[in-house]
Image (tube, rainbow, N blue to C red; front, side, top):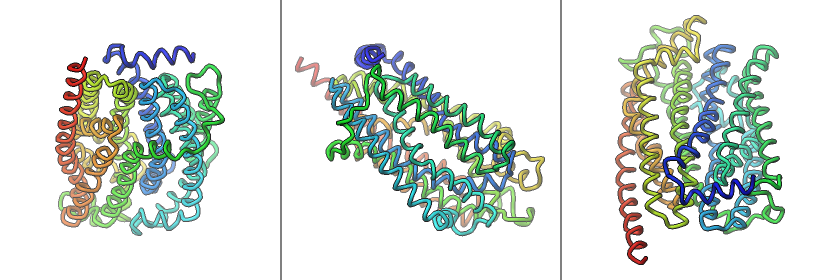
Length: 484
């Protein structure tokens, strides 16, 4: 198997780029979509088994979970990019040292984040709810996060090691491990929620147990003599240069997740405070008895799950592109780098266009997957809000596929500053100011409209920077041919 993975890695520099992208992207798409399905399955079972208010509680936990995941993504994606470049240079020993350092970093960060979040969970929940959520919603959020944070170390290791599996020539195995985790999650969710009667805590336990099983499979892989890259005892020593290299690349996805978390916090706060106050809002305090803000926050949580699924599919193409770009960039085959970039942009744009069509033409059917409108007035109101919000948020979603690929491309060729800049433009430069300005005037409709406006502006910035980088790579390719 090690020889097979080695041959697969070498083929990154010679095989047909279309076939390579399919070979690496299809397993990655399945894996990334499966990762998103964790949240979707949790929400579906909780929505139907516990109620719409529990979904509102989960919506408050989303930015907190994003921050925790941001640290894992920083290490996992940064290490995977560096491993691909080292393998492209033919340096397997350096790749294994990066793998060992990534494991140590994930252990340290996983434990630290778990302790901080568990000790300060209540004030953290209050901060991310803007202090406006009902006590019932906060109680659901607290119950869920206590279990998720308990398993934070497992999550960090599991997600990080899967990134390195793809980078070292095992995309199908990475897919299989993700599917194994999602299958156990789907089986354990109804068992723990309905049979055991654990409610929202049961959903959290299902996630932790499923990821533990997946991690056990990964550990077996990396300790096997048959694996191309393996755990080496000497590699489990933190090296300042390696850690710096991992973090410099991983800082872009880290900032992206952190910014998304704080933007989600401001989104939730705006919806709690202004949801139902706008002239175009479908549910208002005058028509609904209860906390209208909780309805809008819950609806935003459902919408985030749907948007995340398609973003993850687009990211699957990115994951498929990553080892191909990293290897060929390290081997100075810049023409192949540009070709696979073009293929990836086309594929990701097709995915986000499909999302646009579903969100605009079938929003009520999507909402019904998560919330049973027959459960009562509150759940019916949430379906109405989701249907309206999806139609607005996805107005320019076809452009998002390009934006996702452009940001990741800079990351994969080692251009950390540009990757970090692009990862923050949408969230901090555009979306956050719009969220501060539009909801006070237009209610929830202002919050929904902020998203397509921010997407449009960030796509323009990404297009300019990517065009300049493409011209530079073409010049480098020309210079290489001229010298030859």
